[in-house]
Length: 89
Image (cartoon, rainbow, N blue to C red):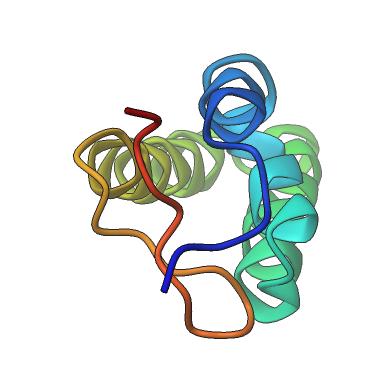
């Protein structure tokens, strides 16, 4: 069964606000959303304290975002209820 969430909106959210995790919040995956948001906050804090850690957390966040963007685009991503976010036919 497919999710009731919009595939197009989900892809747009991950494309524009991907590193902030907005797409995870929209799809009901709160843990992943909080994880993405905390990586951004840590990046800002580490930039002030020690910039190499900021680069490392930013790279981790980008890799995390690209992975889930790929899963969403190919139709293998599940929403918070466990239903696939389907590609519109």
